Amino acid sequence: MYELEMAAAHAPRWTLDAAGLGPTADTNDDDGAQAWFERGVQWMYAFNHEEAITCFKASAEAAPLAPEPRILISYCHGVNYNNPSCEDAPTSFPSNAEAVRFAEEALALVNDTTSPKVAGLAKAMRTRCALPGPTNESGRMTLNEAFAREMHALQEVVPADADLKCLYAESIMVLKPWDLYDKAGRPREAQGAFPGTAKLQALLTASVQEFPGHVGLLHMFIHCMEMSANPADADGPAQDLVKAAAGSDLAHLLHMPAHIWIQTGQYAQVVEASRRACAANRKIVHARGVALFYSAYRYHDLHMQIYGACMMASRAHAMEAALELRTDAMSDATKAFMADKGMCSALEAFSPMVLHVFIRFGDWEAILREVPASDQSIYRVYNATLSYARGIAFAALGKTVEAENERADFRAAAALVPSEWTLFNNTAKDILAVADCMLDGEIEYRKGNYDQAFASLRQAVELDDGFVYDEPWPWMVPTRHALASLLLEQGHAAEARTVFVEDLSKNKGNIWSLSGLELCAERAPDICPPLDSIQRKTLERCRSEADTSVRAPCLCMLSEAKSSSMAATTKGCCSST
Image: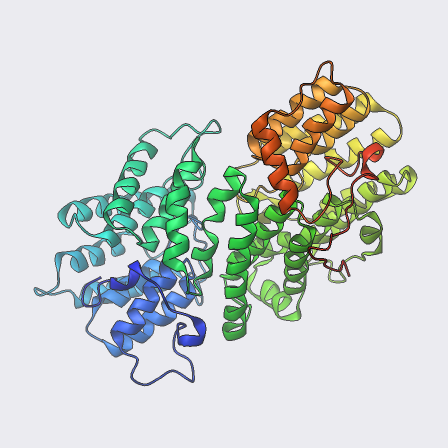
């Protein structure tokens, strides 16, 4: 914005080891209002709103008569696409009181010399927040709709402005957070202040062309397209964001292209983007510690790396991120933060990801060496997931009595998980409900009760399909992999093939289901056709990128599991301890 007018949004080059964070004890005295403001804009567009606020406050101190930094402090304390409800933390972040205070300060600084853009933003920002704050979803939506209308009007008054286009786009998206399309990928229709997803698409498509390299617009465009029927349409902007954010430590922007690539089956690129983001996040932790709302984004980046690595059968990269995530989530500093700030509900469900990695790669003995977390009041999802994983491991090893004992422990532990605890867009309880069905299916299968086993596994698939949209998907090992593998093992090749095809429609080009189709053709060539040329080429690429040899589409398929080398190859190895 302005002389202070968001001029830095096109080419971020701020790095943490080049004073890219907000003021510290080592800050140079000559860093002025403009420099801090531009850094704040970068962190704002990278959704590290806490760091952005630190920079904007430094800018406001250096420019006490400037409305702009105060406008954006208010903005950062408010809702965003990933935090549409914006639960209030009055004395910390996000704070409704702070949003109101800085919006009012900005308005008080507006005068006859203030540009229409800045004056309009100050006015719009004050409509976005209220004291007392909203107490329910309806009250919040009233404020969100008022802000969207203000931003629509303002970007028409000042039409050729990238930042206003970006803020307007996000104001629209907040009205339908993670619900811009139905499950078939059809755009949502207009409703109230929401102009319809098609108009949002048109706005962002035109804007990224008019303002190439604007990281905020590219960020919003990816979010706009990831749920669509054609996410590949955003591959170009995803590549543009890679270039625009290169050389920066704006971790969330480094990560964002993975949201498209995970939809298009480019899992190696998902892992690469995630590793860049995670490296940048480590610098943030070194400088700022873990007691930040932003920790949810750090965990999300690790989660994305784990998911992408599992889908491409890269055990080393999956374990790398999973062990880092568990270590961070179970550190004394994080434990204190979760207990003090009530962040268990947002963070704890990330902690057991390593257990899903063990299941993915059939590391049954590694699972059985794990012990429960000692602080059972905090690590409730972890301990429930451990009992689930142990049950799966015992079942795979043919120890059904022990598996049934673990199932009882799992259900007791799952009952202790609060209903409000989430893994981003889905509740932990809904995720554990899938685990319950999967465990039933695996146990009954080992007992020879195949009809009951398949009924439970089909129920797991149904629950899996019913999750609220999220990336990565909340269930780490696609439920269809186990169902199809065990169907095939019992001679139901045609049905197994159908299930593998269904999975490939959801998880494009994954090595597990492609290997399943190949196995169907080998076992039942009279009814299951061989891979077509595109599938064969994709599978060859997948095998060249994997660090494990995949034969069994699920390691619970014991007749083929021994032919799969689940230990990492010479490409790399990561200890499970």
